[in-house]
Image: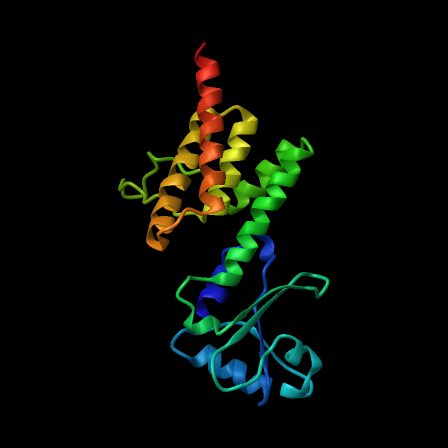
Length: 213
């Protein structure tokens, strides 16, 4: 659960919350054990009414309470957006976090389509603020550039493109392409995501060529 708790802590305005749903045991005792654990996990603990007999548990296909964690992403209205079985043993990072960051990208894209550039900018800059490559700490040492999720990089590139800041847009798009190539290369296939990212980069390159004329 640590990756989810850490991910939620990075979100602006606390828009992602982690709740542990237990099939048995005292929630207060479980929470105290989590806080006292090596990872010091700080999250709310709830008890599932009816345990494994709860209809929602069956709907999600959860068959056992003593193997891996089963995780569910709910929106603020309680609708199920995604479900992942065995999150603890996932080798693909944070699957539910990936769903959230992809939703961020869609929200930024929707704002841009409406022509609301300032809203799109405010949203993505809260998640992936611009980094000054010449920034230094209080001792004059150069700061390490943050690594942003690919959906956030693409979304920020689109915002920079809409603002006419083509050099910044290209830098984000090129980084996204290179990182996506590394991911797809590891999978030995091309994905729609890579095609989309390359198309964005090519669009920005086209705008730069037009500006040079």
